[in-house]
Amino acid sequence: MFNKFLGHFSKDLGIDLGTSNTLVYSKDGGIVINEPSIVAINNRSDQILAVGKDAKDMLGKTPPHIKISKPLSKGVISDFEVTEKMLKYFIDKVHSESFTIVPRPTIVIGVPLETTEVERKAVEDAALSAGARKVHLVENTMLAALGARLPLSESLGMMVVDIGGGTTEIAVMSLAGVVTWRSLDIAGDELNKNIIHYARDVFNLLLGERIAEKIKMRIGSAVDQDDTLQIEMRGRDLLSGLPKEIIVNDTQIREAIQRSVRIIVDNIKSTLEITPPELVADIYERGIVLTGGGALLRGLDTLISRQVAIPVRVAEDPLTCVVRGAGLLLDQPELLQDISLPSASEGGII
Image: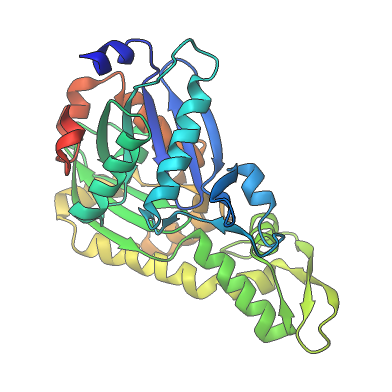
C-alpha cells in the first residue's frame, strides 16, 4: 500500500539497459538520461566514484585501486551489485528535481531475445532493489519496432535488425509477437576489437578501446565511399614501446571490420530463409528497418539491401529506438500487458 502511495509521486520510466549505453525515458520529460553503462569503483573503500560519462572518461587511465566495471555483457547482467547501484543512481538522478523522497516508479526494461529465466530474474531483481515498484520486461526488438513507429499489432510482417554494443538481434514480427529470430554476439564492441586487432597485426600498434571506437565512428563504413576518409591512429608501438601515430583511411578500416559485417548480413539472409512466405512478401514490400548504434555505420543499409535484394532503411534516431518504444508502452497498458514477458520473480508482480 505504501509503495502504491509513493508510486503516485514517482515518474514512470522506460529503460534501455544496453551493453554500451543506458538510456532512460521519463513519462513527463522524454529521454532524460543517455550515458555509457560504465561504473568506476574504488577497490579500497568499495565506493562508487563515477557512473556513466564520468566513468568512461577514466577508461584506460586509472591507478590500480580504481576498477572500471562494465556490468553488462552481451545485453545481460554480468555484475549484479554494480548494475543495481548504476540503476539506483540513474533512478535517483531522474527524481532529483522532484519532491519524492523515496522514488518507487513503474519501469519498462528491454531485454535481449536470447535470455534465460535466470538472466531475466537478475534484471527484475536489480530494478526492484534499485527502487522500482513494478517491473515489466519486454524484448528489445519489440521495443525497437515500437520506437521506429512500426504497426506492431497488425497482421503484417516486419523485420527489425537491432545492432547494439554487445549483440545484434534480427527479428521478424507480426501481431505483436516475434515469429523468427537470431541473436549474434557480433555488434559494435566486436567491430572495435576488429580495429584493435587490425592495428596490432598490420601496423604493430597497440590501440586503446576508446581510440578504436572513435576511428570506427569517424571513418568506419560497410561499402566504398565517394571521398576518401582519413584519421590519425595513435597508440603504442609494439616494437619500440614508444608512442606512435599513423594515418589510416576508410578502406583499411573497412578491411578490418568486413568479416564481422559479413556475418551480420549472412544471418539476416538465414533469418529470411526460415521466415514464412507470407511474411517475407510483406517484408519485401515494407523493407527491413535497422535500429541501434550499429545502424549508423556508413553504407550498412546499402550493403544489406544489395545482398538480400530488399529495401533497407535506418530508423529515425536509431540509438534511441528501444528506449522510445519503452516510453510509448508506459501510455499503452493493454499492449504492455500483451507483450510483457512473464515475471521471473514474485517481486515483479507486486
